[in-house]
Image (spheres, rainbow, N blue to C red):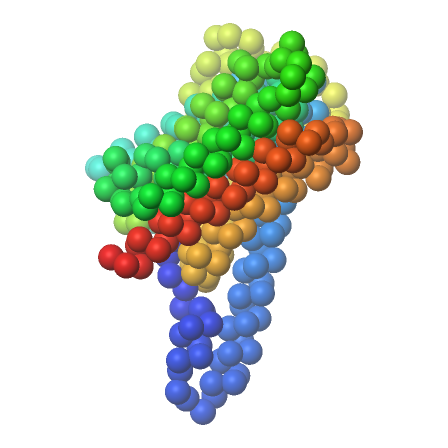
Length: 331
């Protein structure tokens, strides 16, 4: 995932030595406030996918939900590109760029939703949200190998802390830390594999999005994911469950598919206006929204193990981000 620098950062606005500096600051502040609101809305939408997905999976299968979300998300992104007259950017994707877009799209819009929704069918939505959020930790582990990005020793300590948190979250899916009879290791494993898939998408997609339009890369990937998932659904479960699903299920699918696609539009728009360090701090909101909504909508409860695990995961994510950003600045 690419984080372009913003022309509306406070650093640049403060450094401007012009007579209209105050006015420029006011305009810049208003623009940043708008982008912050868009990021909050985006993380709310993505966080809501866990409890909403849990409700949807009562009526259709994870594979069917994955297909519908990819197709509807692609349509939402395509409409936005059409309305903003940016569809022409798709023509720039060719050769290596197209290959990277298809590869990253296959991972994020075919593999990842299948893993995450299959996990969601087996473990609490709140636990799935926290485990998927550990993708940032896997990015930190894979980046030194695949991107040659250095990670300081304190970064590896943060990774260790985060994995201790992950272990506690996994334990919380059972009857308790001392009673592992109801522990769903398979569901938790699917969720962690989804986190690894998301991390792989971030690393591969970063190369594509650093040279090409991010929304065009997203559109190509979601279209590929929708096509592949449609083919798999047609030869496995079929479409009858989708047709026979309740009106509520259809409405929830429409909400998730369309708004998750719009989330990408708002997210990448915000990244063009804000510094990466500011925008990346919003990553904590998505699992928090998922947790709150899972309690309100699904009636899920929080155990001491879950709360402690969540805190350690967030601490580890913060530590790895801080370590990686420090190294990047020093280089």
